Image (cartoon, rainbow, N blue to C red; front, side, top):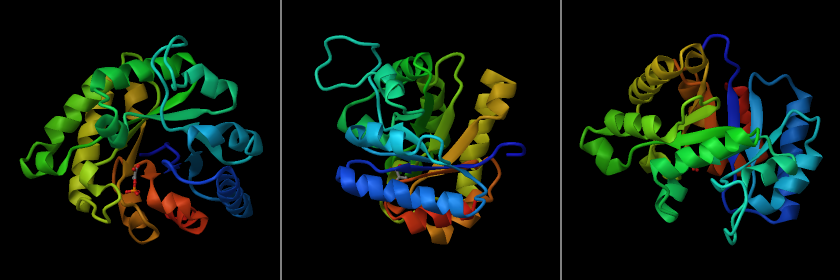
Length: 247
Ligand code: PEP
């Protein structure tokens, strides 16, 4: 999107010891300072590593985010983490509504919207994920499902990032065709612009799902693709940096 700097975001999921996470972040940082990359970088380690990595990346060209937060500001929610706690330890972003959380933890669009409100209130940039299942894609309902998720997961006044992640493309090595990616991203852009005006027209829309160094350049060149949300390939610094270089 003209005037929008791409973002390459790494979703590390439930991988890595603290030592491994610190080494991976350092390798990404070293790569980012060694060359002028055409994209901003974000890494999202497991909760436990957020504080240490945010401290290590302070002032460096690698932002640090989390993979979830609770919708409440505080309270009796055993095992959960509030958005303000993430901000307090230096996180700047939070992934919300990832399909693994929607599936593993039953997160609905309403839950994702509430979490997004909490993230914005805490000063975090939410990265809100939407995407159809394979059955929905085969039934010809991809656009409809993504439009509904988008409408119901984003609160009024949304200011953040949207990630289109077809569930069937995550961790499978399969991706939609370039035409299909461009079509959904165009639909998302139109919905954002209609609802949020100029802010929506400039919102970053990331593609996620089996993005690799080998397919990144073609995907990132598509209209309304403003970066990537990268799972597996973000665990290898050289691959993550290669994707960023292709932006
Ligand atoms: C993800 O889960 O956000 C993702 C895009 O995973 P992968 O790149 O491994 O498909």
